[in-house]
Length: 508
Image 1 (spheres, one colour):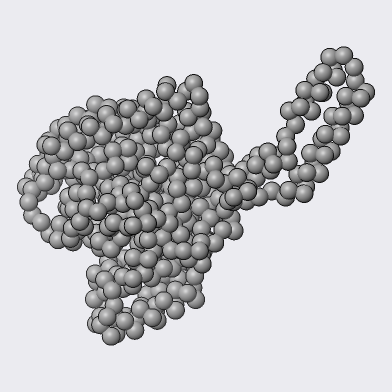
Image 2 (tube, rainbow, N blue to C red):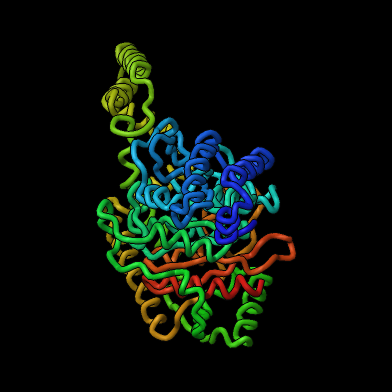
């Protein structure tokens, strides 16, 4: 796939039209999407109309910086007039009434929106198997997962159905699927990109980030979507630097290599491949390698899954069948309750002694119609993984367990952040694998949530610390599957991780 710069050059020269480019992507969707299941909807007519309007601007020399970019949008980011279902039955028919800030910025830059892409329900998953649309499949081997939760985004770019996609990253959900699918995935610093219009999973972790085929394309997208937004008071007013210029800098980078990220549990081929890439760059005098320690990294998975599920429990409480989301049929529920009540009352009249007392207790505990509506609506609307995380989050926030779990996890989160702050005093970026193995087989870990969660072992720490991270292809495993390497940078130092990733990209 050609990158955005070359695409734009072709458009400016008149070698191709944007309509031709859109049609080629739509043809690829027709060819491969039934197999890969990356796109859940493609707006063919709308995409062609957008292409015609943007082409006129290109011809007039007034087009924005992203004219020629054709995007897929993760089904958790709001687009006005488009369904935003979060791959969940609870929001199956919800249609957004406004554009997310990132959509507005990209539209103003003349990016073109091709359609909506698959994901794990409410961004909760590491494989894009927890979805009402059916699992997304890895374009390199459709018996394998794409990673998650932005698996549709990564698969769409890898299968050349679009040249970029938007994803969200709460614990690695842009970077991990990018590694599995052999593309570039960027998680910005928390607050660098507005979250307005992103349906919340865990509000202190969530970030919107691009998935692209090249590092330069990620830099170009970030340039447009970064910046303060008055609609999101957690967004930062830190000035946005020139990310493309950062790629051209030739100052040697000091790369921290934490032993905690290259120990037990990591596939040996991935370990050696990353070491080879780093050694080559060191020999070429591009980087200096420096061993470092991040002593609290062994707690990052436990800390993440306590805090993120607690926030999920709170954020998803609004989907109760009354204010938001799917609602069960109230009339049917009332009829069921009436029948249950009548059956219990009949037993009370006919019973005696202890049996009567048992039935009277059942009657006292019978749901009210409203409580039954809550229960039934949420049971029907949420999938198994989302229910699991709501239950876990509610548990760690509950009376008697708050201090033992949630409060303690917040303290450990601070220690993890301090580990990074200390490390970045001595290094420019920190390197790690993106995932402990190549993409695993579909269904292999759906019955073992702990093993599934461990796929995020190298990515969650960046979200806990609020720093930036990027995954870039490092090569191919002997299985033929892609392998990713991750670089993490200090807050608002996306330029450095983009430059580190660009160095790897040039030697792979």
